[in-house]
Image (tube, rainbow, N blue to C red; front, side, top):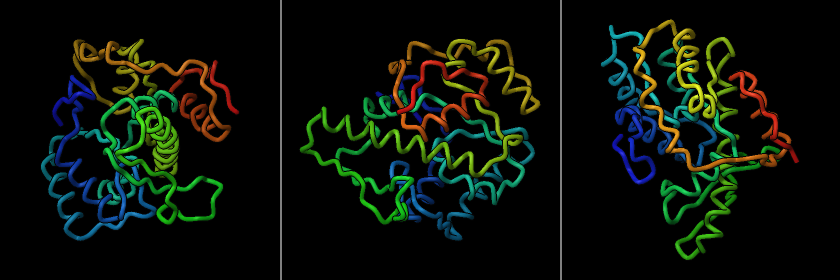
Length: 241
């Protein structure tokens, strides 16, 4: 995936995996910003995924990066049952602010989601709407709220689909402040080695959002605290409310 105004150093996603994920989400009446209730892979989508996987046969270990994997993980696990997961966690408020500051959301979108305490299924409730006439300030506020709920859905989806021994959680902050140590943790988990100059691609200058002592709802704070515990990062300064 090439660079864009949202990331001038590039995104590094393999576009063939992205295409499969996009097709799967669309076939399931969803998208990356409107998570579907259930996945509905067609035979064609499954065949496309198997074709991409086949390209890496005999090149183990291999991996791919795509945030959409958080939503499509059950599908990929059905094809790669022994796969392990590298999970990068960032403060929910920073994630939401980053989305609001980006151009990733379409100018007009409908977001179907449900609160966790609702009895209505995910794809049956229209929670938020943004139109081209919405003011920039209001648009940002709505996207930030959408972003917090997406953070919840993405991270709880991964936690539900993986066991602790099959995943490693790294914290965004730690990757920027101590990249060599975090890379060593990752390599130890997967049993691989990389060159000493690998950390040169870490660019703290690209960090534009800082959460500070953000107030999170109790449920979100609990998920973030659990993930931070796994990543060995403290959550001091994070308040729930």
